[in-house]
Image (tube, rainbow, N blue to C red):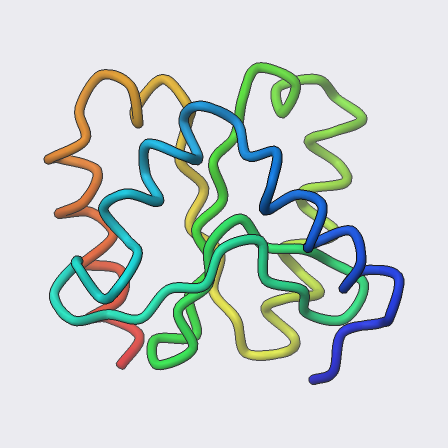
Length: 118
């Protein structure tokens, strides 16, 4: 699916302004460092921009900060996840706190999720 041109421009901007938890996770996902899985960061799909995306596993990894607990944001996330599922993309949501406190456990979880999708 081709991204809309506006999403592509936003993705380029977001790549330069990743949150600290996203940047920390990217160190482990980039250059096929995680079990040879190729991830893209701030990857546009349709109108959405995914924090990290592995095409081989059709897996989106979303790092959620505190704002994702708000009711309006949670509803938006649910709509977004449903739309992605309709496109054949599974969404794995992880908390920014998990990134900070247990990177090794998180990476194992991502590998299991990716393996389940291949």
